[in-house]
Amino acid sequence: MQNKVTKAVFPVAGMGTRFLPATKSIPKEILTLVDRPLIQYAIDEAREAGITEFIFVTSRGKSALEDYFDRAPELEASLKAKNKTDLLEIYNDTCMDSGAIAYVRQNQALGLGHAVWCARHLIGDEPFAVLLPDDVIAAEKPCLKQMIEAYAETGGNMVAAMEVPGDKISSYGVLDVNATSINPAMKVKGMVEKPKAEDAPSNLAAIGRYILSPQVLKNLDGQQTGAGGEIQLTDAIAKEIEQSNNVYGYRFQGQRYDCGSKAGFLQATVAFGLARADLRDELEDYIYDMMAMRQAAQ
Ligand code: G1P
Image (cartoon, rainbow, N blue to C red; front, side, top):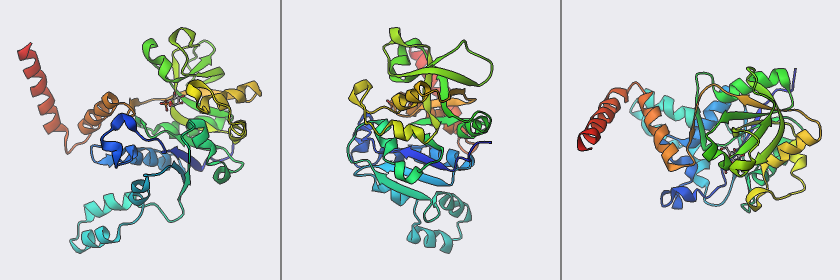
C-alpha cells in the first residue's frame, strides 16, 4: 500500500492572455462554466479523490481566487435572513475550512515545472497530486479518483493520458509507451514536452492530472529549462524514468475539455449546460433551432 495522497497543487499563476480582455481584471480560473468558476471543478474533483490540503500557486492579480474560497459574511447573513437554503448550500460548498488552502506565489513566469516547484516546502516528503484547472474532465468517477485508486496498486508516478489527433500532439507532453495494453495504467518509457508532430513518440498526450513522488520536486531543483525556454514538469517526470523510478500513463474514463482554449471552453459550456436538468430542455431547443436555421441558410 502506498502513502495516501492528501495534498494537491493547483498552478493558477498564468496570466490567461488567451482570454483577454476578460482576464485583464479577472483571473482565468474565475471564468465560469455555466455558473461555477473553472477552479471549482478542479477543487471538487480533488475533494472527491480524498485531497484535504490544497496548495495554490498564484501570482499578482489573483486575489479574487482567495476571496472566492473564503466566507463572505454579508452574503451569508443575507441568504440566511431570507431563508434561501438552496443558495446557502451552494454557497457553503465554496467555503473551504480555515487552513485547508495555502497560497504560494510564483514570482516569475518560468514554466509549469517551476510553478509546481514553488510548492515544495508545503509538500515536503510525500506523494502529491497536481491538477491543471484548464483541463476539465467530466466523468462518472472523477478522473483523479480513478488515478488514486490505480496508484494505490502501482505507486511510482502517474500521469493522466489521452490519445489526441496527430496535428494537435505538439501542444502536449507526450508519452512513450510500449504497445498499448488494455490495462488503463501503462508503464511509460519516456516523456517529451511539446515535440514536433514528426518527432512525437506516440499520440498519447499527458492531460493535467498527475500523482507525483516528491523526488520530482528534487529533479526540479536544478531549474533546467526545456521546451519553449520554460522549466517543464514533463522533463522532471522524465528524469524519474532515467533514475529507474516508475511512471505510468493512466488512460482515464471521461470526457476532457481544453478550457485553456476558447473553442474548448465553449464546448464545455454547452456540454455542462446540457448535463444540467434545470437548463437542458431550453438549451437543447435553442441548439436545434439554431442548427435548423443554419441548414436552411445554406
Ligand atoms: C501543460 C503541460 C503538458 C500537458 C498539458 C495538458 O501544457 O506542460 O505536458 O500535456 O498541460 O493540458 P500547457 O497546456 O500548459 O501548455
